[in-house]
Image (tube, rainbow, N blue to C red; front, side):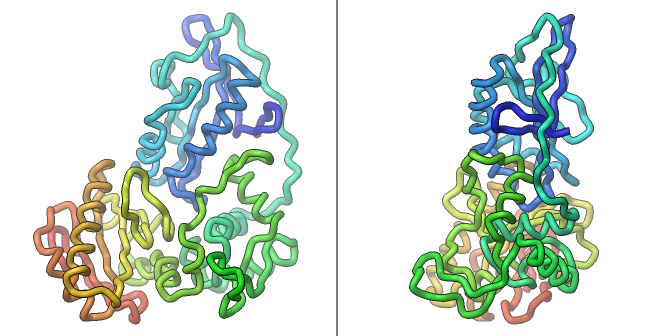
Length: 364
């Protein structure tokens, strides 16, 4: 049951009993497969918490993370390590928080506080697959149906039907847009865009109510949309599903900044491979660099990817898609690999084809 405090909303509310006292705890649900990277929630939560603290002094927050593995929840936890201005607890979905599991002890009231009013849902009702499509489209700003199919994990046929259904309801539009880096240039072909109403629906599904600014979740470098490089990065999940049909590819994101890092992958996918929770880090090779620059850049990015994965204990599959000569030069920088990582290299013109993953080795 969604509840409201002023103009902000939360997934639910509960009063926890501890030694005869009662908390005033608001619940915020986070779903790992809703199109948002885990490290993008903190700016939104900071704004919500500031308003909650003003309207409901003494309140606390319970973050419930629904995820198929551990990495996503750990990343949300790490993103909150600088803390919020009120006590908060973070658990998996279905696990109740312990009183001592909060970041600091929440305020206890002599009697259970009055529950907040139920929020009025004035949004149009859409199916889970329609919402997933809309969430992806809002994050990438605009895109082709093949790209949206890859990022949602749905079939191309289903995506085409969903986009048309959303269009009839005024939530999407198919048109030729403008390059965001140079508005004087038009896109080379029509793309699917979310409408203002569609964007509002996606934002509300993420827990961002009206009047709360939330924008840092979007793809970086929007001027690169419609380039082959961006198309490859957006189709990374579909590429993996084709190359490794026995792997579980849960979700992923194209062109997303990573916390505390100066480099970021062209695309990042998350799933399970050979029984191990794994991040699939994609680099689309640059054919315009010299050999020395390719080796140096590859070595730097591989080190960053390893450091990032070890922070939360997942395995790494580092992939490079590029012309053959770029792969050969990049390979010299990726020879000594630890046993919890693997490197695979493929040709960027051969969609869905990658060599087998062998932990501790590079395969081409």
